[in-house]
Image (cartoon, rainbow, N blue to C red):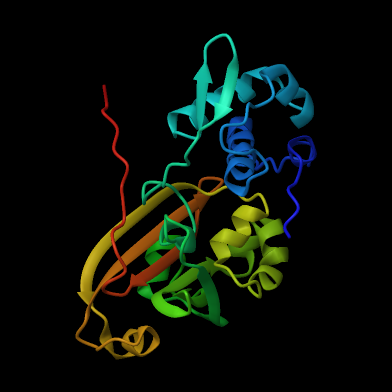
Length: 265
């Protein structure tokens, strides 16, 4: 049986404040994690702003800003004169959010289990794909982590993740550099592990193209080389520097993916 982490204990854990990033981002990440993990139950009333700021050890202004963002994203609702409550049903975010691919592709009904199976983690010379997206010299090295995403044990996607190596990485984030070997051994994508450790990636771009699977991908996904697949290419920055690039190849028949839209007015 899974023991629920009490909201007060969850909130009082130290915030991971990334250099150069607004405090509201760290608060948003903590509260959103609490909502999605069940530390805050659906429909439950949140502590008031003054209580949240005291438990998190920050001022009320970034707390208020984070709460407004959470409400805009459909995770909270406000009842006038009463307070803020967790929504009764969590919205399923789409590709517009910087989220690990195993979360993006997960079954929204939660009837199927998504797992990550690491395939390889190596240091190699950068390819054109990596050098262009991470602004690396063509002679540089980069880490590659390849994983297979399984839904109820069946392959639905492959994920290749790239991070710069050596000083290209440690000069931007010494903590990521020191943690990388450990998190690469975890049964989830690198992005999922880094986000869980409090690292905030910004300025993300996701590009989508359709192509044939090809022999290598086809073997991993158990499809014909001529099968049509979707390729999602994701690039993200850390502290204003491009630090993460990924390529997710989704097998045919997976289902639909969403992109949330808002009226600009």
